[in-house]
Length: 437
Image 1: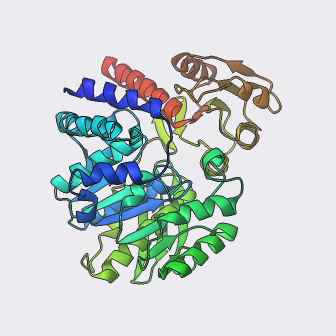
Image 2: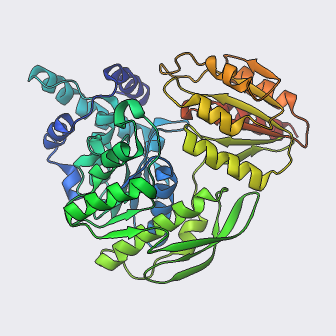
Image 3: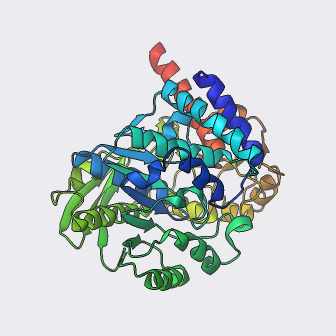
C-alpha cells in the first residue's frame, strides 16, 4: 500500500462515524502486544486549548533534550501532521506501512464479531505502534473527543491534563457543563497526578473525581499562576510562577490572552514530570515556550490586508477570538469569513463575533457534518447589514480579501476543516505573489 492508497483507506473509515468505547481499540492493540503500555505518556484533554497545551508541552520537553512524540487531531493540511516526533511528521511510507499491517487485523476483528474500528481508533492504534517502535522518550497524547470512552483513554499516563470544560459536542458528551466535565474527567487514572485549568462547576466535578481516584491535583490559577506582561503582533510576554520556580519574561509566539493559561498548564505538567523524577530538574521552559509552533490559532497569514486565521469552532473559542481581536486590532475595519458545522452553537458564536464587523461572508465547511450551513447567514443578518453566502471556500476567501482595503482586517474562522482549506489557499497565494516580486 502506498501513501495515497493508505489515506484513501483511512478516509473510507469515516463511514463508521463516532462509535465510543474501548473494546475495539483494546483488542486491536492486544494484537500488537499492547504498545501503549510501554510508552511514557502525558494525556491531554479538555474542550479548548488542549492542542495548544500539547504543542507547548511537546516543545518544553523537546528543548529539555528529550525525543518527544505528539499525537494530535485533526490535521491542517496532511494526515501525517497528526504524528510527529520533535516536530517532524511521520514519513508517508511509514504511515502507509503501518496501516497495511493494521488492515488484516481490522478485517479479522469483524469476522470474529467485533464492530469495525472507526477511523479515529485506527489512527490511535497507528500512533501507539509508531511511537513505540520509534522509542520516543515521551508521548504527549491529545484526547480526540470527550475523555472517558475516547480511544486514547486506554493509556495509563504519567500525568493527566484537563485544560478546561465548555459547551461543545453536546450530542455526545452532555447538555450541561457538569455532565461534560464528568466525561472529560474520565481520563483521570487512579493515583496519577492531574493538572487542570478548569474552573467553576467543571472544576468541582473534576476535583471530586480526582479525590475518588486518589489523584493529586495541580490547579492552574491556584497552584501555578501567570501574568501577561505585554503583547504585540506575533506574540506576547508572560510570567509564570510554578511550584518548582518562577519563569520570568517568557516569550510566547501565540497571540491571545487565552494562550497564557495554556502555557501555564503546559509548564505545570512539565513540573509534575520533574517532581516524579522522570525528567531532569532543569526544564527548558523559556526555550520551549518560545519555540512553540501551533498554526491556525490567531495566525497572521497575510499582510495588506491583514488576514488572521483562527479555528474558533465553538462558543468558548469564539469569545476568546473576540477578546483577542479587541486587544490586538482595536478599531480595525473587519471582514469576517466564516463556516461552521451544523452541530455547533451557531447563534451564540455569531452573536459573539459579528457585532461591529463591516461584512460577513458565510461559506460551507468541507465536511459531511456541514448540515444547513446557510442558516449561519441568517444569524449574521441580525448584526451586520452586508452578508453574503458563497458556498465555495476559495471564492469566499477571495471575496473577503477583495472587500478589504490594505489597512483592513480579514478574519477567517469556524470549522477546523474550513479554516484548514482557507489557510492553504491564502498561503499558496501569498507564496505565489512573493515569488513574482
